[in-house]
Structure formats: structure tokens, C-alpha cells
Length: 53
Image 1 (cartoon, rainbow, N blue to C red):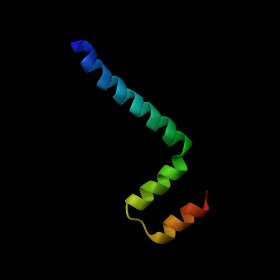
Image 2 (image 1 turned 90 degrees about the vertical axis):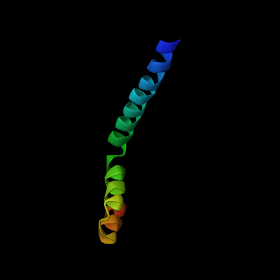
Image 3 (image 1 turned 180 degrees about the vertical axis):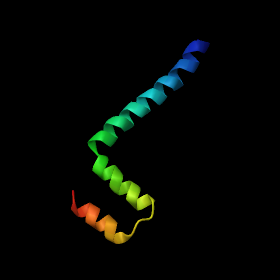
Image 4 (image 1 turned 135 degrees about the horizontal axis):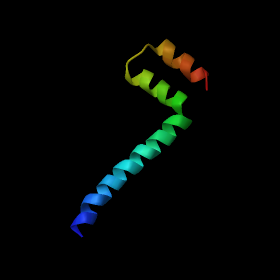
């Protein structure tokens, strides 16, 4: 039982990484755009990125 308690969070972590990897592959352009937003680039950059979709 104790082993399972340790194992499950690790499994969840791996799964989260995998999901994020798949998402980032599929939506890399979107993620790049999000990153640009969060890194505080200018609105011009954000708008031009949005138009690329």
C-alpha cells in the first residue's frame, strides 16, 4: 500500500509531462504566442503572431 502511495504521484507526473509534450508539439505556434505574451513582448508582436494562425 505504501509503495502505491509513492508510485501514483510519480505516474501522474510522467503523464503530465507526456500530455504537455504532445500539446506543445501540436500547438507549438500557440505556445510560442503565449510565451511571447507572458514574456511581455510588444502588442505588435502579439497581434502579428495571432494573424499567423
